[in-house]
Length: 208
Image (cartoon, rainbow, N blue to C red; front, side, top):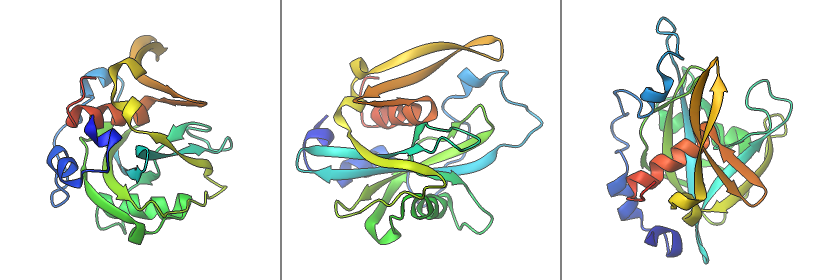
């Protein structure tokens, strides 16, 4: 993938992503794997995350966070900055930018939103819209200790290769379910975060 080994090609990303001027509707791309796991009478909560890409001399990297161990949900997991869309948010993009500022103190002036990935539903009842953005290489992340234990970058190139991601089976609520998982250095990237990276890779033409 030339994106991962050369300066970031914003035009290529724009072509691969869903446009910012229309919030993606329709079903999530992972609905098949959630059959029977979501309560049809319970409306999904809306959420947004920031898939922040950074152009480095050695190639493009992606910003990730590791949640604190004290959180009630997703403690210690690797994730994108983001969270629930609040009533005061003008759009999912606004929610992703707000959450990024609250979690790692990266301001909107350092972030250029480029487009959406496909909607993703979680087993915990969220409909997540990933917002892909270019981050200024000059950003400095300052994790909010109430939510984030660490903020770090990993190279994008391995995340776009089929050999670097595993499809793992697990028993969830009495049935077998599959999820994606990457191992990057000391980091285990799995579940929704890994699935969104797979979606990004597929939109960029990777055979994942």
